[in-house]
Amino acid sequence: MTISAFAAGLAATGLGLHVLSAALAGGRCRKSLPERSPPAYLPPISIVQPLCGVEPYSRETLASIFALDYPEYEIVFCISHAVDPIAPLVRGFIDAHPTIPARLLVGDDRIGVNPKFNNVVKGWKAARHSWIVMADSNVLMPPDYLTRLISRWRPDTGIVSSPPIGSRPENFVAHLECAFLNTYQARWQYAAESVGHGFAQGKTMLYRRDVIEAAGGIEALGVETAEDAASTKLIRRQGLHAYLVDRPFAQPIGPRRLRAVWNRQLRWARIRRECFPGHFGSEIITTSVFTLLAAAIGARDFRLSAGSGLLLAALIWYGAEAALARAAGWPLSRWSPVAWLVRDLMLPWLWVKGWGAGQVEWRGAAMAPGEEELAADAAEPIGQG
Image 1: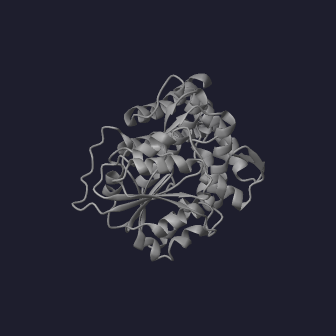
Image 2: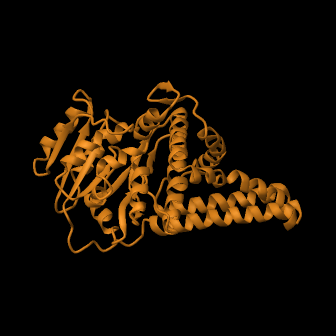
Image 3: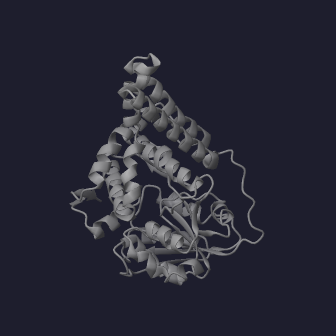
């Protein structure tokens, strides 16, 4: 086999896997997807939400959690410190909605290294209902948020989750953030679930209390740096599965800074490497860079120039992402193809850096992350810088 023939085979394989992943994700995320029939009985649900500081869309996301169309639910807000600036805003919303059972709990349980997890432990223990949703503060909840989560539960379910879908990008870097979140990370997460390898994502997670209690209780989720990774491993040990909600929930992005996007993606890469090193090792092949180079080298076997082969492969690769974004109703503009290309150029370097432990920035502070810093990074909302 010639080098060009081998390269052509690699390009065809890479393009095929990419298009397949987009098709699998599109089948679950398209905006025209029919609603699943909800169960005959909708059980009462407790929403436990950790808070830390005021975010750009805090008022809107708080308003959404009080406007859910569901028969019975309660909200348990959690903050670590009474002086947190979000506290007066939350209390104002609680007072303005007296018909919705809601509480604000203050305190910090030092169970694990993850500060977000430590913040929600008290909420889990105080929750009145057997069904519990952990939801980050920057999730914009549609009225049918809880119904869509509970409708995805089946007998072999251990957790129902939703990846974050970036919306309302206000500058090019925000489009880059969406390129990572939407047509890359969410695409692969839905593709993995479609082949029976679903995993939880900490932005939204629906639990049934008895599943967690059977494995040692809420404290069992503190053994990993990230509580979503711990949840995935915990339910798999019980022979249960992680499923994703249809049409994942959005979080508004607004304007972004390149340094913040880079640091966040680096932190997440290091967390994935720590929690799932085998899966992280394979992430290097998910960028378009190697497939496009292989297409350029293998083009001669199809009597094409290198440039023509590269261009054709790029059109197929990014055309699949554009089709997915359009079908799902995710942000799609003239900036999107450039953002996808920049993302793919960043991915190999993020993968290399993900194996290391150099300095990164978390909320303006440079640090060399050990486990405690990695956990703090996992807890940082995307809406913050």
